[in-house]
Image (cartoon, rainbow, N blue to C red; front, side, top):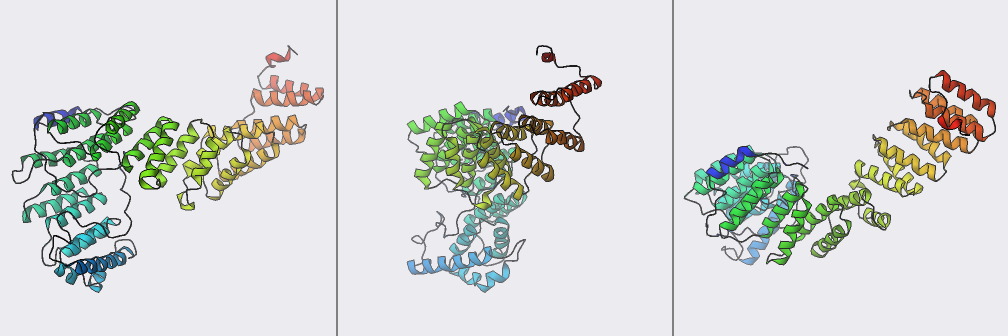
Length: 503
């Protein structure tokens, strides 16, 4: 994969001293949980399970004046409210009636923790969370900075950078913006792929005298941004700036770098960063092992992919469906010992809703290549039931090759009828294979019937078509019919086969 040139960004980076080595004191400031991507693909982060989120660092039951029993009751009430809101029918539900029904203004009067907890639990539905925050701004007391940061995080999940910028402006008007607020805005721009705006937000953070210097998380967001955009040179320069600032790399730093090399298909550098991480003081987490799993799967390094899978299982207990599909794809594309057995084991981890047409087509082809006709036919039947259409000649040829090697002419004929009815990709090889197999079994009438099928689907007769018929008649001792076919070959301008005179 080639990297896109990004020369227009270099002057901007140099002008703002991002490439210079500067010493910045490290200040640990919390950022929204969406700030650093966990994968190399700019997709929506997977929603967390619906359970009470940890108290934001700015607030905690121990630091507030709430006694423990009040905090637990507040959590329970907010969790019930969040469950009711998430159960509202889509699209664009009005949250105000549910908020009043669960006495949200009263909960907010007890503690601002109620709003923070509720916004955290609404992350699976960011548009709903933004609607709740809009209503919350009409209540007293006014939203706190952590609430504004969470709202920007929701806008990031909703892929609405304009809303994120507006919330940031409102927060800056009411409070002195802190590092978490800037990081949330940068994260929103990063998730939307707005490179220049994210860099401008970073420069605004550097210039703002009211805010502390960028943290490692701020640099991590830039690293992830450049990695997603295939700007590997800028990603590496940002890493150097982070090192020059005197701050330590975090697990998010390594994950962002690994994800960037994964996106650029730079497998050697990806593995080198992982080895450096393993030999250093930063321990990899589940995200690290899943990134390595995906990278090894794309690179075809099956043994190392399996090792990464085992490490991820040790950390998380299980591996998500996305990475199981990546492993299945690798097993289908690259030959490996006992790959069919391993494919079957992974398929058991998928639910019916996890079906993907492209994966089913890959499975059809791998079963065909392994000569497992029954397994191949199970996948073909599933594809037909789910209205999946095969549109590549390579897959169709793999299927007919499997039938030919198994000498299953009737199964092949049945499959061709199914493919014709389902609108799958047809090719002349389908019909030539039927003719060869019919001729091999001396079923000459059915072999001649294939010519009508070819004509129906507008496949012209070629020299190979006539040669198959000639060989079939010769093998059955029908020399007159074989000579007739030779005459037809001359008539159509194909001439006689070169090996005819050798015989």
